[in-house]
Length: 593
Image 1 (cartoon, rainbow, N blue to C red):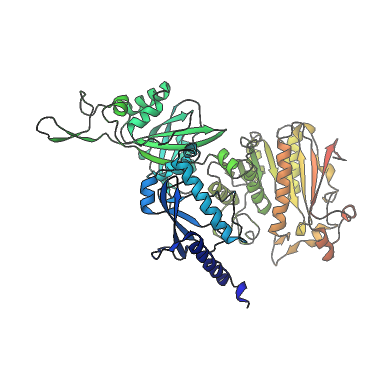
Image 2 (image 1 turned 45 degrees about the horizontal axis):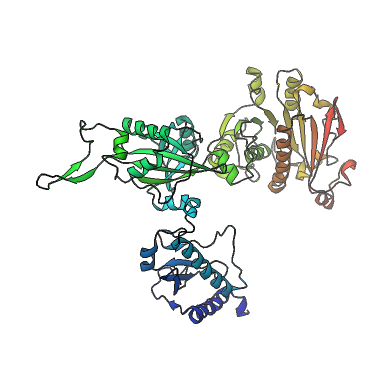
């Protein structure tokens, strides 16, 4: 094998070249003590002069340089002289590049070194000359995190006024976070329990939330008096924290938010039990003060604690991760929240129904009602959302458990029986949902529920879904209640759908030895394609003000069907693979959309 194509040799060659370059151009010295040789095989010390300061830079070349940026740290003496500076953390590391926006040019490793050193000089110069103090605020979360003790989560909805909220301690294996701030205790309890966490209701705390209208200025608050200075120009907030500290025991947490360009940054601080050592004027004796001067022992007064008697008490700081569903969809999605308040019932939690349920959460719908009488078995798991560990449990339960671990704010109800059993006892049980999806592929049940809709017993839209063998095609029928469409008009007398893709779909079902062992063969990859297309259609329909009843035919890999000599219905012979056809239904007849 050509040595130049061996990855280890490539990196070692570039590393050697880079080290020689830094020694020749910058008089760098190789640092012998290195505790991170696996990740950073070589560390070099470079001396630079910035704004009159002689600064020692430690440049660590990663094992995969130049595919990753080098790390820049300050030497101990330089750090002690200059800290704090914007973009310099407590681990003495300089943040040079936002690696989400920037990436190194692997074809120019020496250029990476030069540009990194110049970037370090610019950042240090701007910090020393106080030209970039606003960047402390821009990187508030980073600096607040550096001085923190623990990590917490929040599902508190921001507001324009202070309010009482709750802090729920919890314990999750492998999580750094140890608690959740919430407006509503029951919502938080469900959030934690959905993920399998442990809580103790006796440890719940009442907490104050304060919305800050302006960014904090550096240096950020460290003591009671700093909090007083932060809030003294904001009388309602100062009054709120004074009352809160007067009424509540220590430690007492305060959650805050900072709004900037419609985005929220969160943090928390904590006031600990008052304590200070004082020297008595009488004989210089040392005493410990834990109460306010002139008050009975145990008396609390928030304003005096902040501004007078215990103004130098240090506060504890906590970074907060905002895990509200709306924020996570904005941070990890397209930010669309129009479906957040919608509720959908899914009848049938087999392979199609389970992936439909997940698809609904993907488009922002988290309130579901899952209905199915079957239990998951081994024959299901290859294409079902859930797997072998869930076998033997009711399908609605396992789908619910799967989804709520992914979306702990979701509200998912289940009915582990036949939908007709439910409608027999509660005919209008599904009318509280914005959409009813039938993923059962059972025409008698579909016709019966369609009849209930045409008779105005069911008053919400219905979406019927089913697929054909080998996923040659998949179908959807959207029925608006006001249209009073009878779906029987869309089927032939023998029960065959008029838009069937395969000429005789039943000819391609398979059967094992035994009673009721027939099954429809198809793969999960094609199923997901079908579901994704149907979810896009569903999202459009839900948000369409003048939506119409429609039939939708999703065409699978028709080329593959022909290759395997599966006969297609004549109307689809010239159709394109993986395409979608939608038609309006008017007066029980289809018309081209």
